[in-house]
Image (cartoon, rainbow, N blue to C red; front, side, top):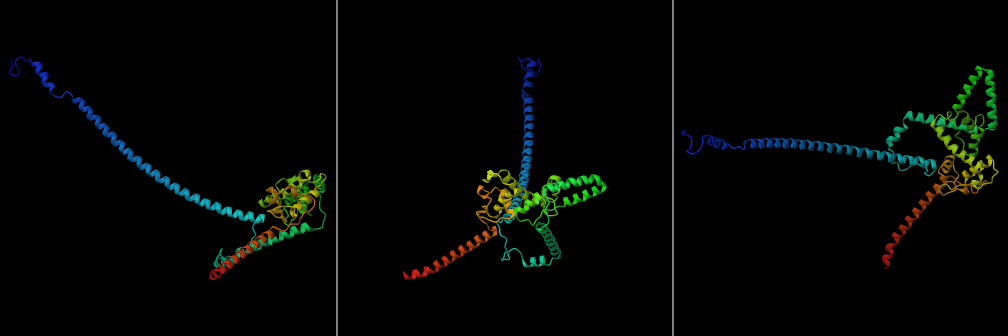
Length: 356
């Protein structure tokens, strides 16, 4: 019997019992420690990620706020510019339609004396304005002379016949015909619509027959299309004149639609439209003598009525500015009378109190 063995106990069982006292759950504990370490690492990574996301969200929010502030400033600026443009267009439309009467502002609130002196002493502005006035005066004098001359006017048939003769002569003359055609084309493409015209009769004469020494607009349109109207001013003016011409043609083709007799010719249709310009209208609530621009507005905005169309002039109107001046004087008189009434009432109050 060995000294280390107990009586009645085998030596192998003793060794196993001693080994079992060395915590058999050690591997499990080490596994738990590893898992806890990994969880802590994941928590630390998630914490850093959340902090990074917070910073990114804060930067994104601040950047969005800056963009919104810049956008609001741009929107406010655009709104101001659009409002200013609307006011300018209102002034332009008011002047063109006759709703606004231009007058000198005596309050001297628009400019300062220094600005007036600087503008008045500018030689460049003075020369430009003087040159512009001279060009306008020369153009108007030329248009007025061409409009009121007594020379014969080419009809549409004569223009067409002369075109055919020129075409035949061109084949015979050769090189000379090419140069003449080129010169004629240059004169045609530089044609300017007459600005001195003030009546529907002259508008129709310029379009259908042509003014003295000048081709008709209808022949230019048929021969060259829209190429002879090179500037924007000519295109705009031609469009306004064509609105009146189209109304003349419509009255001639469909007279019964306007309550007119069926057998009317072009001159009678021109007379009907001219009577509308002279007073057979209800422009802004009055029988006005319209300018050609106002007549274009009257037709383009479909302000005309069936009773406006007549071969006789029912009432001779006055210019729109006359009605505006009368309305303004009436408003001033009403305002003055109201002030007088208020002053009389204020003066009569102390006397009535004294009597009581």
